[in-house]
Image (cartoon, rainbow, N blue to C red; front, side):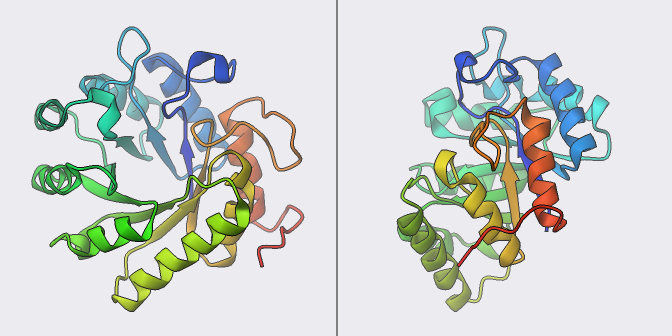
Length: 245
């Protein structure tokens, strides 16, 4: 089980004053998160104008690895980043500095092609599953047994409904005999309850400003490192336990 730090996602600058939106800030913030206990980093690289860009992967990975040399670093391949399937694939083909892994959303039309390309390039795949339909599509991917990790990520903000969806996805994968590591995470209202569920089920989790800015007590975190420290404390049983049932 690990705690991954998701530094920025698609959040805009006004979301939090310490949201890292350039290469230098990501490298600095990544190091702070590792010092706070994060085992891995998940980053959405940004171009010169602060917009998400798959063409910024080389520069970003180089910078982050310079401050976090022994840390696995992953990136997003979200379809909205380039907003064009061919351009997404061309950008991945053009990477000269490869991330350790990349997340692929199974809900996106070009997901199978992106996953195949990542495998060809030797980049690990975090298979992002947000619904039973995504899980079924994942099972239809020929290389599903070789992905780096399964990412169960539920956007639903009603905790009961979100928990049921996560449980249903996990049960479907289990019945299909899938034995890949699982990372469970929530968004905004479900961040901390899902950290507790992941801990209870001995899965990995992630926290960071991509997913939410509040600490377990409801206050706004000073930044990504504070969010990571709170999650690490839960995993180390140093914090008051959540009722994950």
